Amino acid sequence: MTTYILNLVSLLGGLALFLFGMDVMGKALERTAGGKLQTILAKMSASVPRGFLLGLAVTAVIQSSSATTVMVVGFVNSGILTLQQAVGVIMGSNVGTTVTAWILSLSGLEGDSFLVQLFKPSTLAPLLGTVGIILYMFTNSDKKKNIGLILLGFMALMTGMELMSGSMKFLKNEAWFAKLMVSFSNPFIGIAVGAALTAIIQSSSASVGILQSMCSTGAVSYGCAIPVILGQNIGTCVTAIMGSIGTNKNARRTAMVHLYFNLTGSLIFMALFYGIGLVHPWRFLADPCNEMSIAVIHTAFNVAATAMLLPLNRLLVKLATLSVPDDAQQDKTELLDERLLGTPAVAIQRAHEIAVRMAEDSAEAMSLAMGLTRHFDSKILDQVLALEDGTDCYEDALGTYLVRLSDMRLSVSDNRILNTLLYTVSDVERIADHAVSVGRAALEMEEKKIQFSQQAKAELEVLERAVSDILTRTVDAYRSFDRNLAMKVEPQEQVVDALVREVKSRHVRRLRDGLCSVEYGFVLEDLLTAIERSADHCSNVAVEILQVTEGKLEAHEYLNSLKAGELRESAAFSERFARYKAQYAFPEEKSE
Image (cartoon, rainbow, N blue to C red; front, top):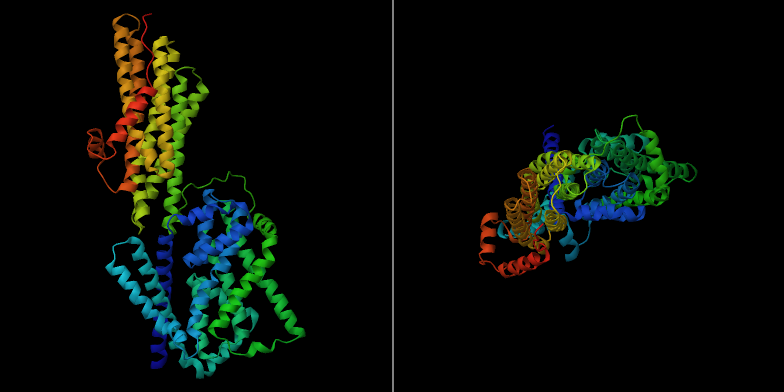
């Protein structure tokens, strides 16, 4: 009894170490890849085969088909991917996850040569662990630390595998265990056990690893391994199905595509394999299976299922659509799906995309509002108000999402992007608020029949052109965090300030000469204040963007040093200011 208990403890400890190693390795690989994960996945729209290759690559990188599938469900729920595009990725993830089994099969290497002994887990794991701890403890580079974590995760994974194998060796001579393994040769029992185990531990790679570790007993035959592996492919769908709860219909359909793909592949394989076995019995089924054989079976099944069902991807989509029919209520896309938080690097990129969308809407709102001062249209004003409401929603969603991301472990580059977004979303939203102020000033002009003089109109057109340009530059810089574009915003903001001061001075002169009324001046003051503050917010955004490439700096200190000629960029700033000032020069004043 004591032997059973001690070996059970060793088995559970090995499983814990195995799962921990997979988690550490996968997350470190994900951080190393950073936002490239979403960039890769976003390029899959060309075709389903291309999506298959990308799904395979991403899953091989993050070592989890479940994580890839949940990520895809989140992308579909957020509107990044269509259901059709998601099919190829799901198929690719099933093949990509077989990489783990090949890594684990190293424990089955046999031979006395130095190369074979080097690659055995008992040698390779401590070697990689030593290199990993050196990189993690004694380097300052974030990238090197992540590589160290990858190696440490690999060591934990392999050591856990060794512990599980060692704890099961005593079962070799146990009659009840041999009888249990024989029962798994029944296809239905084997599939049920494989599916249940995978559903419980939420990882097909881990359940395959457990099966490989059981091979050390010699009681796992091919007849037992094959149905269990089929069941493991079905059980891994549970994670995606659970992840699709509360999503829109296309996201739920994505999870169903995953289920139908694995279920159909397993059923067809069973029908063919065991059907042939009835006519020509498979003699090898009673032979003992080893770690390498498990990896071969796992890969062969997934590759064969993909080759068979990839051309039939549209039928899978139709089947999923029938399973999750359209409902009467409008199905809304969730902008920032919480499921993406499971892959923080991807969540950061998604938050950046939404922030850029908000910036584009704010800039459009200001452009439309400024046009209302020349030609008022109530429908255009409604568009401005709608855009402002949308930016409020964006800001609320982003604020909550970014705060949650700030508690997660991120790479240096992703952390800088996160901080930039946290500091800029309020500035971006305020531009839309000022657009509403401009629109309301235009409405007041319309209701009170206020008409600016020709000179005032000409001056405002120059000012509006300068503001439109600074908004465009800011949005472009925000989209790509382009340092060169961001550097052009501040000199243009200074020109806008100068233009506003000049408009006010000219208005005072016209007011003094009796060419304009005080009432007109109130409306003009509202317009100029809103326009000037919009340019100020553009400056704030640009300075924060510069922090992504130059590290943390105080915005006011930076701007003061820039204008005082104390920075290397000061000469370029002065040159751009002079050029923009000449570009947006007012026409000469004329007496009216």
